[in-house]
Amino acid sequence: MNQLSQLNSTGGAPWLVGIPTREADFVASEPQYQRFARQVDLSAIPVFAAAPRDGVTDPCLGWADAQRAPHAPSSRCPGSGRAIFFEGHYLKGVGRTHFAWNWNVRNSTMHGTGHLAASGAVRELLISDYLEAAGSGSTIVPCVAILVRDMESEFARPWCRYADEENIALAPVDRTVQAISVKPGGFLRWSNIIHELLQTDVGTGALIEPLELLYRGLGGGGADDGVTPRAICELITAAIERGLANFERLYHHGVYWHSFNNNSTLDGRFLDLELASVLGEGHPCGLRYSETKQASPDRIAGLGVVPGEELAFFVRQTRQSIQEVIRVLTAAAGAEGRGSTSRDYLATLADGMRDVCAAEPMVRTSEDALARRLGAMWGRHGGDRAVIDDCAQRICAEYLDDAPAAHLDDGGQACPHYDLANPEPGVRARVLYPEASSGPPRDARAIAARDTFNDALRQLDSTRSSAQLLELLDGARQRVRLAAAALNPSAAR
Image (cartoon, rainbow, N blue to C red):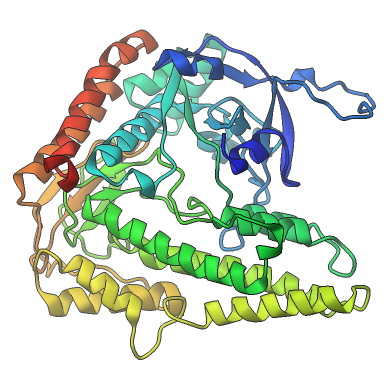
């Protein structure tokens, strides 16, 4: 168990809240993970009680993390509402935690039940297999196992009734099975740091602990005296580059996540994998969504979703997070209640972070480095470079300068397309390739990997019990790994 996993699994960070758990009747995809068959047990919290002298040290405690994402705050989602850290791992789908403030809100039902749809857990596991076999497992916090069980009737009935009343076409597996996904717990988010800084009295409150944790979460190590403003800023710059490089590799493999808000770790890996899709190769394209009961559109017109634009989203999200930290540090550095050494440290760190935010790729300059990076990524397989470069510039203007939403132009013509396995319950996604694009994919290995992944998801989505899902899961995983391994240059040598 690494340092961050230990920290998260023992409540060592100030934004972690203890969550009682108990054993549950989930069955693990691999026996060594059966110990994570647990669910939240809030009934174990006494109505009135005094904490013991040494605190509660119950080994059944999990830990949920508070979060504050400045780019998309939500008063009813203040942290992990269905996930906990436990024994060095991150378990999603264990039931409602203290942060499930939306538990009784009708329009939050899809995210407020405490459970993880089985289809989402399957996507987390299969995309982790896919990327590991393709040689890009380091780009994500991987799902190492899932646990599943048949829904108990007292939950299944209202869950399915809600879906039917809202016209959400659940996959068969999501009407009958629920799941827990298991990931290594060694990560932090910007939203954790921001949450803690916003709880601190800027005049006298201790800021050293969250800043030390920022340093650790960015990948810093060694002696504590290494936590200098310069060291933190250098790690931030390295993490931004790592995150961009990771998204480039994911695009190269045709992997798209559909949702990016608050889903990257401090060190630049992607975390929330449940909406994973595989498009094959990285070719310029557009995505159109529809309800599963509707016909899929065959044109891109008006589309605001272009795979690859997540690089610009990541930059904007990171910039906004850093700016929120700068705001707190600046206020604290000006507080008379602090000593001069502390004020100088905080002011120097705030200035260093401003320099990070004022440089490429965090802002657009005459060099337009991020747009050129996007253009090179999108044009790797050819296509109309003038159209591609123009779209790249408009995407960067959208995310970094708040310009109108950009999209690829289909020229008013129907586009070649590919229908993905549904990325989430009740949502259909179609990938469309306009004439200016170099796509659809042509490499036989990439096409085979794409089709194998999507076919595996469709097969597992159609199962109707946890036993049937587990029976088919190993074979699906083996097929996905084998197809993805053909894309791995090192495996071919």
